[in-house]
Image (cartoon, rainbow, N blue to C red; front, side):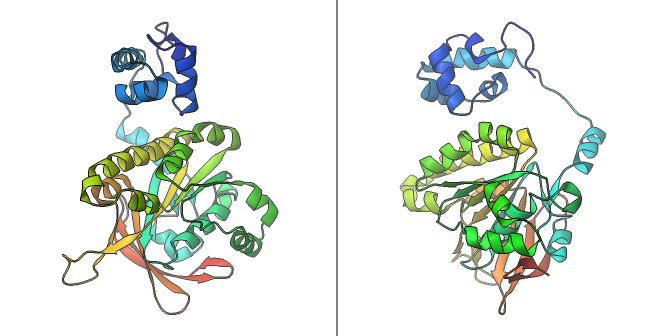
Length: 316
């Protein structure tokens, strides 16, 4: 919360005029707290002011904000009230400790046709249900980077769940991103839509596809990881600010260094590994069956669930 030190709006910060403030707001930096946690270079690039002036603005924003401390018991109380989205199958919900959690990033990685997008579709439908039916009574922002969004499939899942398919589709806002810049911009400008439309789930399908195609070779790796790190942190910030769930799918590669066992490794390296709260590894089994392994979770043990991808959605 901003303290009353004469600084309440962006325009009150030193060096930030009405034009600079508008540019910052358009990029999602619409309050003092966001400026306080931004880097001077970020503020400079977006607003057009010098880095020195941006540093003064960031310092002033820090001075005008307070930091709140919570006890472990207060955090426990908040966690008990945390919303969860049903994943459709009882076994998968149990594996996840009740479903896909709000205020967190859930990553699902696996090979082609392992069920990652299908799980995303199931969550898109289920998040719209009331809280007592395994939803968050909210809408969806779907960032489509690979052309995977299928409204006809969502209609099927909605009908099978006894929901109005037209209303379900009306509650999903889709951005078709064809470059990493568009992907990043969609998240940076999401604040207004989230607030006004009660978005409770953000789906990024897939996180790494565009990053992999644009940043080729070892020489581009540093820049890619820096850009990716910033992007994922903005996703986490949205989850924290608006109590919503982030579900992102990720591609895989075969790691030649793994001689025994499954060489399948998610792409994105440590940046993605550290940022995801919960990591799921999905792989194809016989016919419609998929095996979902919980690889990493701060509060649930590792384990597996077997699900079925049917015309009606995700089932046990």
